[in-house]
Length: 299
Ligand SMILES: [Zn+2]
Image 1 (cartoon, rainbow, N blue to C red):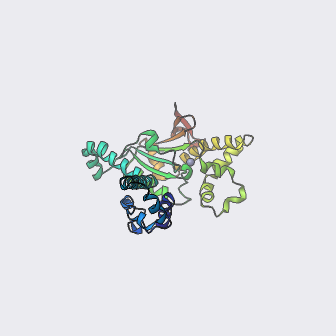
Image 2: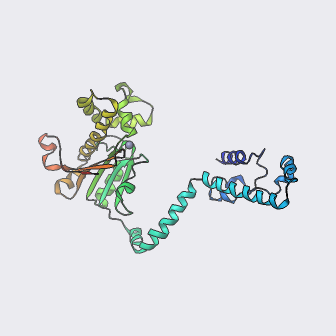
Image 3: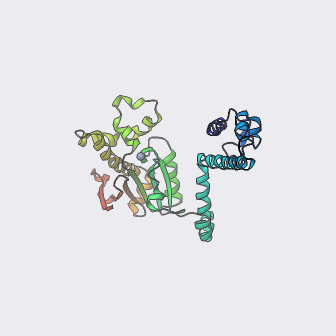
C-alpha cells in the first residue's frame, strides 16, 4: 500500500525518487496521507528545475510551487476513497445523528427491528439504499445471491443471523430480496453439473441454489442464458422462502401468524421492485407448493 501510494505520487510529479517528499511512509494509506508536503528545497536538489527556475522570478517560482503543492494534495485526496467516506459520515452525524439524538441513544440501548432482510452482497442492491431502511429498522444479512439454505445443510452464517433476529429480536417479517443481473445466479446457471466440487468459493456457495437451478432448467431450458438467469433470480427467492420454513422456530411463528415471509425482486435495469408474501395456509403440509399472496409491483 505504502509503496503504491509513493509510486503514484512520484509518477504524478515526475520525481526521480521519493526523497523529496516529507513524511513517514508509515502514514501512507491512512488519514494522515494528506499531511504530506512537497519539499520546497526540491528545486535546490534538482538541476533541471533549478535551471528553469533561474529564468523566472522568485515570486512566480514560489507560486508555481504552491500550485504544485495544492495539486498534489488534491490528487492524494482523490486517490483516497476514505475522504468521501469520512465526509459522508460527518454529514450523517451532523444532519441525522445529532438531530435525532434521542432516537440514536435509544438504539444504543436496544433494537427492535420489524424486518430481517436477506439480500445479495452485490454493491448495487443495498436494501437500506433502495428501500430506505434506517438504523434500527432491519436486521440485515447479505450473501452472494441472497440464498437461504435449509435448516439441516450448509454453513451457519445466515442461520446465526436468522436465529438471533427471529428468536431474540422477534422480527415480524423476513424479506428475501433478489435482483436483476445477479452474478451469483449467473454463476449458478452457467455451471455444469460436474462442476459442483469446484474449488471456487463462489461456485461452491451458489451450488446450494441447485434446486432453483433445476426447476428453472425444467421450465426454461429453451430460453437463452439471460432469460434463464432472470427466471432463476426469482425462482431462487421462492426456494429460499421455502427453506425458511425448514427452520422449526420460523415455521412455528409463521403458523401462529406472528411472522411473515416475503420475497422481493429489485430490477435495477428498469427501476422496479416486485414484492410478494408467502401464503402459509396453502403450503407444504398437504404436499402442495407454497402459494403467493399480496403480490405488488412498484414502478
Ligand atoms: Zn446478486
